[in-house]
Length: 527
View 1 (cartoon, rainbow, N blue to C red):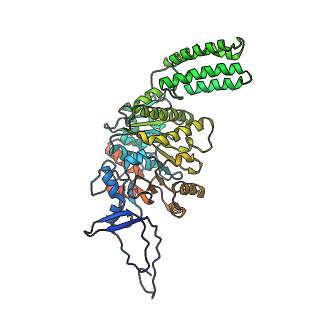
View 2: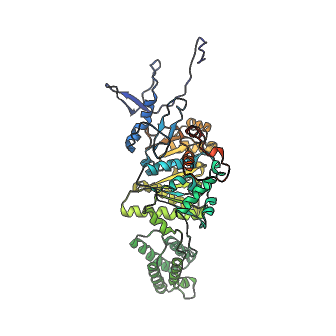
View 3: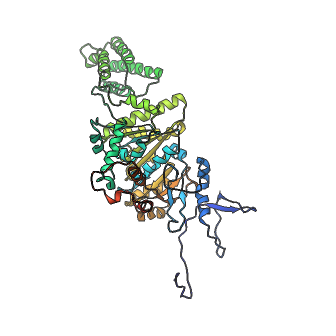
Protein backbone atom coordinates (compact mmCIF):
# COMPACT_ATOMS: atom_id res chain seq x y z
CA UNK A 1 0.00 0.00 0.00
CA UNK A 2 2.74 2.43 0.91
CA UNK A 3 4.63 1.84 -2.34
CA UNK A 4 1.66 1.74 -4.72
CA UNK A 5 -0.99 3.89 -3.00
CA UNK A 6 -3.66 1.98 -4.93
CA UNK A 7 -6.23 1.87 -2.15
CA UNK A 8 -8.83 4.47 -1.31
CA UNK A 9 -7.93 4.55 2.37
CA UNK A 10 -4.44 4.07 3.68
CA UNK A 11 -3.13 4.05 7.25
CA UNK A 12 0.37 3.81 8.63
CA UNK A 13 0.38 2.28 12.11
CA UNK A 14 3.30 3.23 14.36
CA UNK A 15 4.43 2.22 17.83
CA UNK A 16 5.88 5.19 19.72
CA UNK A 17 7.33 5.45 23.21
CA UNK A 18 7.10 8.84 24.99
CA UNK A 19 10.47 9.92 26.40
CA UNK A 20 8.98 12.66 28.63
CA UNK A 21 10.98 15.48 27.05
CA UNK A 22 9.57 18.50 25.22
CA UNK A 23 11.28 20.05 22.21
CA UNK A 24 11.25 23.81 22.79
CA UNK A 25 11.97 26.27 19.96
CA UNK A 26 12.57 29.85 21.09
CA UNK A 27 11.97 33.08 19.13
CA UNK A 28 15.46 32.88 17.62
CA UNK A 29 14.91 29.37 16.34
CA UNK A 30 17.24 27.82 18.92
CA UNK A 31 16.16 24.42 20.18
CA UNK A 32 16.39 22.89 23.64
CA UNK A 33 14.95 19.88 25.44
CA UNK A 34 13.21 20.17 28.77
CA UNK A 35 11.87 17.53 31.10
CA UNK A 36 8.12 17.38 30.83
CA UNK A 37 5.23 15.80 28.99
CA UNK A 38 2.88 17.54 26.56
CA UNK A 39 0.03 15.30 25.45
CA UNK A 40 -0.28 14.96 21.63
CA UNK A 41 -3.61 16.15 20.30
CA UNK A 42 -5.60 14.42 17.58
CA UNK A 43 -5.41 16.45 14.41
CA UNK A 44 -2.24 18.29 15.42
CA UNK A 45 0.50 18.72 12.87
CA UNK A 46 3.36 16.20 13.16
CA UNK A 47 6.98 17.04 12.39
CA UNK A 48 9.79 14.64 11.51
CA UNK A 49 13.11 15.73 13.01
CA UNK A 50 16.32 15.36 11.02
CA UNK A 51 19.43 13.38 11.96
CA UNK A 52 21.28 16.45 13.26
CA UNK A 53 18.47 17.08 15.75
CA UNK A 54 18.44 13.44 16.83
CA UNK A 55 22.20 13.67 17.42
CA UNK A 56 21.65 16.85 19.43
CA UNK A 57 18.95 15.19 21.55
CA UNK A 58 21.05 12.23 22.58
CA UNK A 59 24.58 13.61 22.63
CA UNK A 60 24.79 17.38 23.16
CA UNK A 61 24.83 17.22 26.96
CA UNK A 62 27.28 14.32 27.10
CA UNK A 63 29.70 15.83 24.57
CA UNK A 64 29.74 19.07 26.53
CA UNK A 65 30.43 17.18 29.76
CA UNK A 66 33.33 15.10 28.40
CA UNK A 67 34.73 17.93 26.25
CA UNK A 68 34.43 16.12 22.91
CA UNK A 69 33.94 18.63 20.09
CA UNK A 70 34.62 16.71 16.86
CA UNK A 71 31.80 16.77 14.33
CA UNK A 72 32.70 13.57 12.48
CA UNK A 73 32.20 10.30 14.33
CA UNK A 74 34.35 7.20 13.74
CA UNK A 75 34.55 3.72 15.26
CA UNK A 76 38.28 3.99 16.10
CA UNK A 77 38.47 3.94 19.95
CA UNK A 78 41.62 6.08 19.97
CA UNK A 79 39.93 8.87 18.03
CA UNK A 80 36.35 8.75 19.27
CA UNK A 81 34.86 7.86 22.70
CA UNK A 82 31.50 6.83 21.27
CA UNK A 83 29.89 3.54 22.36
CA UNK A 84 28.29 2.79 19.00
CA UNK A 85 25.43 4.01 16.82
CA UNK A 86 21.65 4.21 17.22
CA UNK A 87 19.87 1.11 15.91
CA UNK A 88 16.73 3.11 15.06
CA UNK A 89 18.36 4.91 12.13
CA UNK A 90 20.72 2.31 10.72
CA UNK A 91 18.85 2.26 7.40
CA UNK A 92 19.45 5.96 6.82
CA UNK A 93 22.51 7.25 5.01
CA UNK A 94 23.82 9.05 8.10
CA UNK A 95 24.53 7.16 11.30
CA UNK A 96 23.76 8.74 14.66
CA UNK A 97 26.51 7.96 17.20
CA UNK A 98 25.82 7.41 20.89
CA UNK A 99 28.08 8.74 23.64
CA UNK A 100 28.07 8.18 27.39
CA UNK A 101 29.63 10.32 30.11
CA UNK A 102 32.61 8.07 30.87
CA UNK A 103 33.54 9.53 34.30
CA UNK A 104 29.94 9.15 35.48
CA UNK A 105 29.72 5.68 33.94
CA UNK A 106 32.68 4.65 36.11
CA UNK A 107 31.77 6.42 39.30
CA UNK A 108 28.11 5.46 39.46
CA UNK A 109 28.52 1.79 38.42
CA UNK A 110 27.11 -0.07 35.42
CA UNK A 111 25.98 -3.54 34.41
CA UNK A 112 26.01 -5.61 31.21
CA UNK A 113 23.40 -8.36 30.89
CA UNK A 114 23.02 -10.81 28.01
CA UNK A 115 22.92 -14.51 27.27
CA UNK A 116 26.04 -16.49 26.37
CA UNK A 117 27.37 -15.31 23.02
CA UNK A 118 25.58 -11.97 23.21
CA UNK A 119 28.81 -9.96 23.17
CA UNK A 120 29.27 -8.98 26.83
CA UNK A 121 33.07 -9.26 26.75
CA UNK A 122 33.14 -7.52 23.37
CA UNK A 123 31.16 -4.56 24.72
CA UNK A 124 33.20 -4.36 27.92
CA UNK A 125 36.54 -4.34 26.09
CA UNK A 126 35.07 -1.69 23.75
CA UNK A 127 34.17 0.46 26.78
CA UNK A 128 37.54 -0.16 28.44
CA UNK A 129 39.40 1.21 25.41
CA UNK A 130 37.30 4.38 25.47
CA UNK A 131 37.86 4.78 29.20
CA UNK A 132 41.65 4.38 28.92
CA UNK A 133 42.16 6.45 25.76
CA UNK A 134 39.86 9.31 26.72
CA UNK A 135 40.35 9.59 30.47
CA UNK A 136 43.72 10.14 32.15
CA UNK A 137 42.80 9.69 35.81
CA UNK A 138 41.32 6.21 35.44
CA UNK A 139 42.38 2.69 36.39
CA UNK A 140 40.84 -0.71 35.70
CA UNK A 141 40.98 -3.77 37.96
CA UNK A 142 39.50 -6.70 36.03
CA UNK A 143 38.58 -9.91 37.85
CA UNK A 144 38.78 -12.14 34.78
CA UNK A 145 37.61 -15.64 35.67
CA UNK A 146 37.35 -16.60 31.97
CA UNK A 147 40.97 -15.61 31.22
CA UNK A 148 39.99 -13.78 28.01
CA UNK A 149 40.85 -10.11 28.52
CA UNK A 150 44.64 -10.43 27.99
CA UNK A 151 43.81 -11.05 24.33
CA UNK A 152 40.66 -8.93 24.04
CA UNK A 153 42.75 -5.95 25.20
CA UNK A 154 46.06 -7.12 23.71
CA UNK A 155 46.47 -3.93 21.67
CA UNK A 156 46.09 -1.91 24.88
CA UNK A 157 48.59 -4.09 26.77
CA UNK A 158 51.06 -3.46 23.95
CA UNK A 159 50.58 0.32 24.18
CA UNK A 160 53.76 1.79 25.75
CA UNK A 161 51.77 4.76 27.07
CA UNK A 162 49.50 2.56 29.21
CA UNK A 163 51.18 0.80 32.13
CA UNK A 164 49.57 -2.57 32.74
CA UNK A 165 49.90 -5.92 34.52
CA UNK A 166 48.42 -9.35 33.85
CA UNK A 167 48.22 -11.61 36.91
CA UNK A 168 47.84 -15.34 36.24
CA UNK A 169 46.96 -18.19 38.59
CA UNK A 170 50.23 -20.04 37.95
CA UNK A 171 53.57 -18.80 36.70
CA UNK A 172 53.89 -18.91 32.91
CA UNK A 173 57.39 -20.30 32.37
CA UNK A 174 57.48 -19.39 28.67
CA UNK A 175 55.78 -17.03 26.26
CA UNK A 176 54.21 -20.00 24.48
CA UNK A 177 52.77 -21.26 27.78
CA UNK A 178 51.20 -17.86 28.39
CA UNK A 179 49.77 -17.59 24.86
CA UNK A 180 48.15 -21.04 25.06
CA UNK A 181 46.59 -20.31 28.46
CA UNK A 182 44.54 -17.34 27.21
CA UNK A 183 41.07 -17.78 25.71
CA UNK A 184 40.54 -16.22 22.28
CA UNK A 185 37.40 -15.37 20.26
CA UNK A 186 36.33 -17.88 17.63
CA UNK A 187 37.61 -15.81 14.69
CA UNK A 188 41.12 -15.74 16.18
CA UNK A 189 41.49 -19.35 17.34
CA UNK A 190 43.22 -20.53 14.15
CA UNK A 191 45.24 -17.37 13.54
CA UNK A 192 48.80 -17.80 14.83
CA UNK A 193 49.27 -14.05 14.79
CA UNK A 194 46.99 -13.88 17.83
CA UNK A 195 49.46 -16.03 19.79
CA UNK A 196 52.34 -13.92 18.51
CA UNK A 197 50.76 -10.77 19.96
CA UNK A 198 50.40 -12.49 23.34
CA UNK A 199 54.02 -13.61 23.20
CA UNK A 200 55.06 -10.00 22.63
CA UNK A 201 53.10 -8.96 25.73
CA UNK A 202 54.95 -11.65 27.70
CA UNK A 203 58.29 -10.41 26.34
CA UNK A 204 57.52 -6.92 27.63
CA UNK A 205 57.48 -8.27 31.19
CA UNK A 206 53.81 -7.49 31.79
CA UNK A 207 52.85 -11.02 32.83
CA UNK A 208 53.15 -12.14 36.44
CA UNK A 209 51.30 -14.57 38.69
CA UNK A 210 49.59 -14.59 42.06
CA UNK A 211 51.98 -15.80 44.73
CA UNK A 212 49.61 -17.37 47.20
CA UNK A 213 51.66 -18.21 50.32
CA UNK A 214 51.71 -21.85 51.38
CA UNK A 215 51.66 -20.70 55.00
CA UNK A 216 48.44 -18.79 55.57
CA UNK A 217 48.75 -15.97 58.09
CA UNK A 218 45.49 -15.47 60.02
CA UNK A 219 43.56 -12.27 59.42
CA UNK A 220 42.13 -10.16 62.23
CA UNK A 221 38.68 -11.35 61.22
CA UNK A 222 39.58 -15.06 61.25
CA UNK A 223 41.30 -14.65 64.64
CA UNK A 224 38.23 -13.03 66.17
CA UNK A 225 36.03 -15.70 64.58
CA UNK A 226 38.25 -18.40 66.11
CA UNK A 227 37.93 -16.84 69.58
CA UNK A 228 34.17 -16.52 69.24
CA UNK A 229 34.05 -20.20 68.33
CA UNK A 230 35.97 -21.01 71.52
CA UNK A 231 33.54 -18.81 73.43
CA UNK A 232 30.57 -20.76 72.07
CA UNK A 233 32.26 -24.07 72.93
CA UNK A 234 32.76 -22.95 76.53
CA UNK A 235 29.37 -21.31 77.00
CA UNK A 236 28.64 -23.58 79.99
CA UNK A 237 31.64 -22.12 81.87
CA UNK A 238 31.00 -18.44 82.67
CA UNK A 239 34.55 -17.69 83.80
CA UNK A 240 36.00 -19.11 80.57
CA UNK A 241 33.59 -16.94 78.57
CA UNK A 242 34.73 -13.87 80.53
CA UNK A 243 38.37 -14.74 79.89
CA UNK A 244 37.75 -14.95 76.14
CA UNK A 245 35.82 -11.67 76.17
CA UNK A 246 38.88 -9.99 77.68
CA UNK A 247 41.10 -11.32 74.89
CA UNK A 248 38.62 -10.38 72.14
CA UNK A 249 38.38 -6.84 73.54
CA UNK A 250 42.18 -6.55 73.52
CA UNK A 251 42.34 -7.52 69.83
CA UNK A 252 39.51 -5.15 68.86
CA UNK A 253 41.17 -2.26 70.74
CA UNK A 254 44.42 -2.97 68.88
CA UNK A 255 42.58 -2.94 65.54
CA UNK A 256 40.86 0.36 66.32
CA UNK A 257 44.08 1.97 67.53
CA UNK A 258 45.98 0.95 64.39
CA UNK A 259 43.09 1.34 61.91
CA UNK A 260 43.19 -2.32 60.86
CA UNK A 261 40.36 -4.10 59.05
CA UNK A 262 39.10 -7.64 59.48
CA UNK A 263 40.60 -8.71 56.13
CA UNK A 264 44.17 -7.67 57.00
CA UNK A 265 46.71 -10.23 58.14
CA UNK A 266 47.84 -10.02 61.75
CA UNK A 267 51.36 -8.76 62.52
CA UNK A 268 54.01 -9.52 65.15
CA UNK A 269 52.93 -6.60 67.35
CA UNK A 270 49.40 -7.97 67.53
CA UNK A 271 50.80 -11.38 68.52
CA UNK A 272 52.56 -9.72 71.49
CA UNK A 273 49.31 -8.05 72.56
CA UNK A 274 47.35 -11.29 72.07
CA UNK A 275 49.88 -13.38 73.99
CA UNK A 276 49.96 -10.98 76.95
CA UNK A 277 46.17 -10.59 77.09
CA UNK A 278 45.50 -14.34 76.79
CA UNK A 279 47.93 -15.30 79.56
CA UNK A 280 46.60 -12.56 81.84
CA UNK A 281 42.99 -13.61 81.22
CA UNK A 282 43.50 -17.30 82.04
CA UNK A 283 45.32 -16.30 85.23
CA UNK A 284 42.68 -13.75 86.30
CA UNK A 285 39.72 -16.06 85.70
CA UNK A 286 41.53 -19.19 86.92
CA UNK A 287 41.21 -21.26 83.77
CA UNK A 288 42.24 -24.85 84.52
CA UNK A 289 45.75 -25.63 83.29
CA UNK A 290 44.57 -28.95 81.80
CA UNK A 291 41.84 -27.37 79.67
CA UNK A 292 41.97 -26.79 75.91
CA UNK A 293 41.42 -23.06 76.45
CA UNK A 294 44.49 -22.84 78.69
CA UNK A 295 46.60 -24.62 76.06
CA UNK A 296 45.32 -22.23 73.38
CA UNK A 297 45.95 -19.12 75.49
CA UNK A 298 49.51 -20.03 76.45
CA UNK A 299 50.67 -20.85 72.90
CA UNK A 300 49.71 -17.66 71.04
CA UNK A 301 53.35 -16.63 70.65
CA UNK A 302 53.76 -19.45 68.09
CA UNK A 303 51.92 -17.27 65.58
CA UNK A 304 55.16 -15.32 65.16
CA UNK A 305 56.71 -18.39 63.55
CA UNK A 306 53.78 -18.57 61.11
CA UNK A 307 54.32 -14.92 60.13
CA UNK A 308 58.06 -15.51 59.71
CA UNK A 309 57.53 -18.52 57.41
CA UNK A 310 55.13 -16.52 55.25
CA UNK A 311 57.72 -13.76 54.85
CA UNK A 312 60.33 -16.27 53.70
CA UNK A 313 58.07 -17.54 50.91
CA UNK A 314 59.06 -17.03 47.28
CA UNK A 315 59.54 -13.37 46.45
CA UNK A 316 58.51 -13.80 42.80
CA UNK A 317 55.07 -13.04 41.49
CA UNK A 318 52.50 -10.73 43.04
CA UNK A 319 51.12 -10.95 46.56
CA UNK A 320 48.07 -9.18 47.93
CA UNK A 321 50.37 -6.48 49.32
CA UNK A 322 52.10 -5.87 45.99
CA UNK A 323 48.75 -5.71 44.19
CA UNK A 324 47.57 -3.13 46.72
CA UNK A 325 50.67 -1.06 45.97
CA UNK A 326 49.86 -1.22 42.26
CA UNK A 327 46.46 0.33 42.96
CA UNK A 328 48.40 3.46 43.92
CA UNK A 329 51.12 2.96 41.30
CA UNK A 330 51.39 3.87 37.60
CA UNK A 331 49.52 0.80 36.35
CA UNK A 332 46.26 1.70 34.62
CA UNK A 333 45.15 -1.89 34.04
CA UNK A 334 45.47 -4.75 36.51
CA UNK A 335 43.97 -7.79 34.81
CA UNK A 336 43.67 -10.71 37.25
CA UNK A 337 43.11 -13.72 34.99
CA UNK A 338 42.56 -16.56 37.46
CA UNK A 339 40.16 -19.41 36.73
CA UNK A 340 39.91 -20.64 40.34
CA UNK A 341 36.84 -18.87 41.78
CA UNK A 342 37.92 -19.25 45.43
CA UNK A 343 41.27 -17.55 44.82
CA UNK A 344 39.58 -14.78 42.86
CA UNK A 345 36.98 -14.27 45.61
CA UNK A 346 39.75 -13.91 48.20
CA UNK A 347 41.31 -11.18 46.08
CA UNK A 348 37.94 -9.44 45.60
CA UNK A 349 37.42 -9.31 49.36
CA UNK A 350 40.90 -8.05 50.17
CA UNK A 351 41.46 -5.60 47.29
CA UNK A 352 38.06 -3.89 47.47
CA UNK A 353 38.23 -3.55 51.26
CA UNK A 354 41.76 -2.15 51.13
CA UNK A 355 40.88 0.34 48.37
CA UNK A 356 37.88 1.63 50.33
CA UNK A 357 39.84 1.89 53.55
CA UNK A 358 42.70 3.79 51.87
CA UNK A 359 40.37 6.26 50.14
CA UNK A 360 38.47 6.92 53.37
CA UNK A 361 41.71 7.53 55.23
CA UNK A 362 43.22 9.86 52.61
CA UNK A 363 39.96 11.52 51.44
CA UNK A 364 41.02 10.99 47.80
CA UNK A 365 38.70 10.50 44.84
CA UNK A 366 41.31 10.30 42.06
CA UNK A 367 42.37 8.40 40.15
CA UNK A 368 39.02 6.78 39.53
CA UNK A 369 39.28 3.00 39.83
CA UNK A 370 36.79 0.70 38.12
CA UNK A 371 36.53 -2.82 39.56
CA UNK A 372 35.16 -5.19 36.92
CA UNK A 373 33.36 -8.40 37.93
CA UNK A 374 32.95 -10.51 34.82
CA UNK A 375 30.74 -13.60 35.27
CA UNK A 376 29.22 -11.79 38.26
CA UNK A 377 27.23 -14.84 39.37
CA UNK A 378 30.54 -16.15 40.76
CA UNK A 379 30.82 -13.16 43.10
CA UNK A 380 27.36 -11.83 43.98
CA UNK A 381 24.83 -14.69 43.94
CA UNK A 382 21.59 -14.25 45.83
CA UNK A 383 21.13 -16.23 49.04
CA UNK A 384 24.86 -16.93 49.40
CA UNK A 385 26.48 -18.30 52.53
CA UNK A 386 30.00 -18.74 53.88
CA UNK A 387 32.83 -17.50 51.68
CA UNK A 388 30.46 -16.58 48.85
CA UNK A 389 28.44 -14.39 51.21
CA UNK A 390 31.60 -12.56 52.28
CA UNK A 391 32.47 -11.90 48.64
CA UNK A 392 28.96 -10.70 47.84
CA UNK A 393 29.00 -8.35 50.82
CA UNK A 394 32.42 -7.00 49.79
CA UNK A 395 31.11 -6.10 46.32
CA UNK A 396 27.91 -4.67 47.79
CA UNK A 397 29.88 -2.47 50.18
CA UNK A 398 32.13 -1.27 47.33
CA UNK A 399 29.14 -0.21 45.24
CA UNK A 400 27.30 1.37 48.18
CA UNK A 401 30.22 3.46 49.39
CA UNK A 402 32.65 3.57 46.46
CA UNK A 403 31.15 6.40 44.42
CA UNK A 404 31.93 8.85 47.25
CA UNK A 405 35.60 7.96 46.93
CA UNK A 406 36.08 7.55 43.16
CA UNK A 407 35.67 3.76 43.21
CA UNK A 408 33.27 2.25 40.68
CA UNK A 409 31.99 -1.20 39.83
CA UNK A 410 30.99 -2.98 36.63
CA UNK A 411 29.22 -6.33 36.58
CA UNK A 412 28.51 -8.62 33.63
CA UNK A 413 26.42 -11.77 33.71
CA UNK A 414 24.01 -13.94 31.73
CA UNK A 415 21.67 -14.77 34.66
CA UNK A 416 20.63 -11.55 36.36
CA UNK A 417 17.78 -13.33 38.19
CA UNK A 418 20.18 -15.02 40.60
CA UNK A 419 22.22 -12.00 41.68
CA UNK A 420 22.28 -10.04 44.94
CA UNK A 421 19.51 -7.47 44.43
CA UNK A 422 21.23 -5.01 46.79
CA UNK A 423 24.07 -4.83 44.26
CA UNK A 424 21.75 -4.41 41.27
CA UNK A 425 20.04 -1.45 42.95
CA UNK A 426 23.35 0.44 43.01
CA UNK A 427 23.74 0.40 39.21
CA UNK A 428 22.99 3.72 37.51
CA UNK A 429 23.68 2.57 33.94
CA UNK A 430 22.96 -0.74 32.26
CA UNK A 431 23.26 -2.44 28.89
CA UNK A 432 20.72 -5.20 28.21
CA UNK A 433 21.16 -7.64 25.34
CA UNK A 434 19.08 -10.69 24.52
CA UNK A 435 17.78 -12.44 27.65
CA UNK A 436 15.79 -15.51 26.49
CA UNK A 437 14.37 -16.34 29.93
CA UNK A 438 11.28 -14.28 30.82
CA UNK A 439 12.17 -14.21 34.51
CA UNK A 440 15.48 -12.46 33.77
CA UNK A 441 13.64 -9.76 31.82
CA UNK A 442 11.16 -9.39 34.68
CA UNK A 443 14.01 -8.79 37.14
CA UNK A 444 15.50 -6.14 34.82
CA UNK A 445 12.09 -4.48 34.47
CA UNK A 446 11.48 -4.31 38.23
CA UNK A 447 15.05 -3.34 39.12
CA UNK A 448 15.45 -0.55 36.56
CA UNK A 449 11.85 0.55 35.89
CA UNK A 450 11.86 -0.45 32.22
CA UNK A 451 8.61 -1.53 30.61
CA UNK A 452 8.54 -5.23 29.74
CA UNK A 453 7.28 -4.48 26.22
CA UNK A 454 10.51 -2.57 25.58
CA UNK A 455 12.66 -5.36 27.01
CA UNK A 456 10.88 -7.89 24.80
CA UNK A 457 12.30 -6.04 21.79
CA UNK A 458 15.77 -7.25 22.83
CA UNK A 459 14.76 -10.79 21.83
CA UNK A 460 15.17 -9.65 18.22
CA UNK A 461 18.68 -8.30 18.81
CA UNK A 462 21.68 -9.86 17.08
CA UNK A 463 24.91 -10.09 19.12
CA UNK A 464 26.36 -6.63 19.67
CA UNK A 465 23.05 -4.78 19.98
CA UNK A 466 21.96 -3.38 23.33
CA UNK A 467 19.24 -1.54 25.15
CA UNK A 468 21.10 1.26 26.96
CA UNK A 469 19.56 3.24 29.79
CA UNK A 470 21.10 5.40 32.49
CA UNK A 471 19.99 7.63 35.32
CA UNK A 472 23.05 9.85 34.94
CA UNK A 473 25.51 8.97 32.14
CA UNK A 474 23.47 9.50 28.95
CA UNK A 475 22.11 12.59 27.23
CA UNK A 476 18.51 11.85 28.27
CA UNK A 477 18.17 10.53 31.81
CA UNK A 478 16.40 7.19 32.15
CA UNK A 479 15.36 7.04 28.49
CA UNK A 480 16.01 3.62 26.89
CA UNK A 481 18.08 3.71 23.70
CA UNK A 482 18.64 0.86 21.25
CA UNK A 483 22.34 0.84 20.37
CA UNK A 484 24.53 -1.14 18.00
CA UNK A 485 27.91 -1.15 19.75
CA UNK A 486 31.16 -0.80 17.87
CA UNK A 487 32.84 -4.17 17.39
CA UNK A 488 35.85 -4.49 19.68
CA UNK A 489 37.31 -7.20 17.46
CA UNK A 490 37.75 -4.66 14.67
CA UNK A 491 40.33 -2.85 16.80
CA UNK A 492 42.15 -6.16 17.30
CA UNK A 493 42.07 -6.97 13.58
CA UNK A 494 43.46 -3.55 12.73
CA UNK A 495 46.22 -3.92 15.30
CA UNK A 496 47.17 -7.43 14.18
CA UNK A 497 47.18 -6.35 10.53
CA UNK A 498 49.40 -3.37 11.31
CA UNK A 499 51.79 -5.21 13.66
CA UNK A 500 53.46 -7.10 10.79
CA UNK A 501 53.36 -10.34 12.72
CA UNK A 502 53.83 -13.30 10.34
CA UNK A 503 51.23 -16.04 10.31
CA UNK A 504 52.54 -19.61 10.08
CA UNK A 505 49.17 -21.10 9.16
CA UNK A 506 46.57 -20.41 6.55
CA UNK A 507 44.69 -17.46 7.99
CA UNK A 508 41.00 -17.57 8.76
CA UNK A 509 39.32 -15.26 6.20
CA UNK A 510 36.94 -14.01 8.86
CA UNK A 511 39.80 -12.90 11.08
CA UNK A 512 41.58 -10.69 8.55
CA UNK A 513 40.53 -7.20 7.63
CA UNK A 514 40.94 -6.83 3.91
CA UNK A 515 39.68 -3.28 3.56
CA UNK A 516 37.82 -0.51 5.26
CA UNK A 517 34.60 -1.81 3.70
CA UNK A 518 35.21 -5.16 5.34
CA UNK A 519 35.51 -3.44 8.70
CA UNK A 520 32.14 -1.78 8.21
CA UNK A 521 30.50 -5.08 7.34
CA UNK A 522 32.27 -6.92 10.15
CA UNK A 523 30.65 -4.58 12.66
CA UNK A 524 27.47 -6.56 12.13
CA UNK A 525 29.18 -9.51 13.84
CA UNK A 526 29.94 -9.59 17.52
CA UNK A 527 31.20 -12.49 19.52
